[in-house]
Image (cartoon, rainbow, N blue to C red; front, side, top):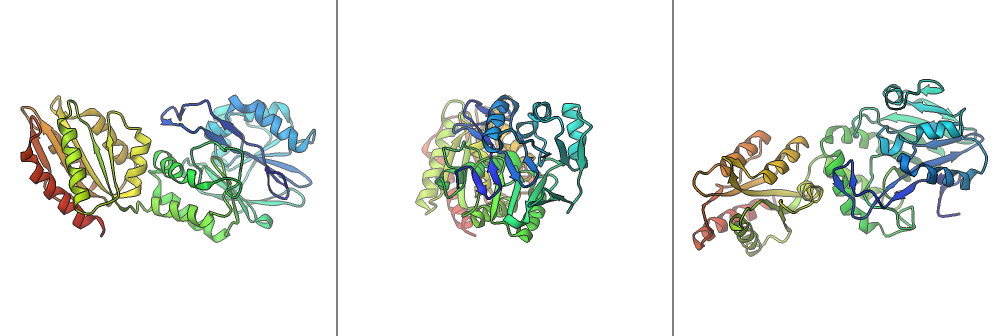
Length: 395
């Protein structure tokens, strides 16, 4: 079996992107990203998803390597985001008779994005497609993370093509399945991907997980990152915990600081937490930190300690931006504490408390508020904040 043969008659034809620096023009890609596509080969051939159009020639080459001059009969579109669908027009030129398979929302988007409204097949929940030797069925998982999203199931091979679900950032360095590569490098990238891309949609992800578990797949063919086989239980568990917003014991200290005084508060709180026995502590300077990394840690740990200076009568902008990102992802049930500083009129702490009320987060303790420069007077309030957090963090 070649590296690209996932199961008999199921071939990988995806590509790596090591050039794009921002996924969705927002999220950093220090290790690149893969755009995964798959051929399912019976008497007839189906291609499941395409790739970003700038890599379309590579997709064509990979297809030719697998099937030569045979035609592709069906293109199955699990997800319409352009990094998976923007090669549809070129593919239709290569294979004029190809029939595009998708649900009603998908086909509406195919018309809207690419002006294609002929040669399509609409499928509903549980519908099947017989390739001759391979039978595919379709299951809708809307809002993971677009409304048209579905998965495609090949029962005889116990293989599920999952679209963006269970994906990760990070290109594939040779191996394609989790038995051909070291999967450890992808776990934090999966958390970061989930937090940045899927994080708002915990409820739909839970519904999707119920469908996936009922199928009991032995292979998960995602559109980003490795094909999962050995590590499926860990993948499903990670998605389950993240979609329930279940944080591990640990603290994220996220702060902004204009001249270093608020930063000294953050450093003191971190030191006092360690003194109180907390071991999982991550500290992020929001003026420099990668937002997707901060969000990854917010989803991972059960405690948030946020601080910043007063700026123009409000909250320092990088801190406010993080809080808006978290609010838009509807993250509940976090232990919360605030700290802040001001020069002549305090507002940062008040803004942080208003944010906590907005999310219905209960503050663990009184905030630490500092006027002007850092001094030893702040050590006792920081120690008390850390003590209260340490008491709560493991619950």
